[in-house]
Amino acid sequence: MLAFERHNKILDLLYKNKKVTTQDLSRLIDVSACTIRNDLNKLEKDGLIKRIHGGAILPEAIQRDLSFPSRKSKNQIEKNAIGKSACEFIKNGQCLIIDASSTAISLAKYLNKTDLRITVITSGIYTALALKDNNNINVILVGGVVRPKSGALEGLLGKNLISQINADVAFVSARGFTLEEGLTEFNIYEGELKKFLISRTKKVVALLDSSKLEVSSISSFADSKKLDTIITDFNSPTNVLEKYRKYGINVIVAPKEDK
Image (cartoon, rainbow, N blue to C red):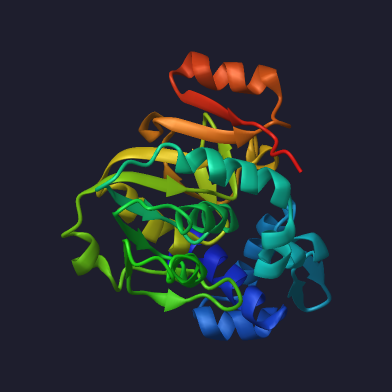
């Protein structure tokens, strides 16, 4: 098992159990305790874990971030603005890919109120549920392993289905975005699925609130060159957005909604 695979396995176990021991990790991953200690040191240096005697826990900030209710409520005004702006990009008869992100759910809620006849392929249980009451929208939920709490599907169990899809636009969010690293995710398995979904679409639109810009995580799933458009919010720094535009990415700033 390669180092990044071990790291993601450790993070997965931490996400599920909140605490891991060096001894248990050594047994489960089938490597020496010395290797595990080196892995934990690297993950702590990257700010992804907190070392404790004999093992590790997730930092409190990451525990909050991994909780879907926490992510869903964070920057909700900004996410609603992004979702509304993204809705304006969509045309009748299109086939869309929409991910499992909390920003994507905002988009789905606006789509649910339209008369558009479209097909939506999604990796998110909550995204699908947000569209379930609109008879004009054909919703396809891709196969995968359900990630606890978030309702996101991960892994490539639905690969055969996805390989038959030719979508018009993919709307995806990410844990972070930089020009150097592209779109990145905290979970490598979720990133794998997003990467494959993006490969089946003509156009990629990134839904990124201002807290995601100039931030990177451990798993890159889309190179900056693959992005056609970034839709962000009114709090995003102008100098950062200009840098993206000079790179060749179409940048849309969603206006703040009137109360």
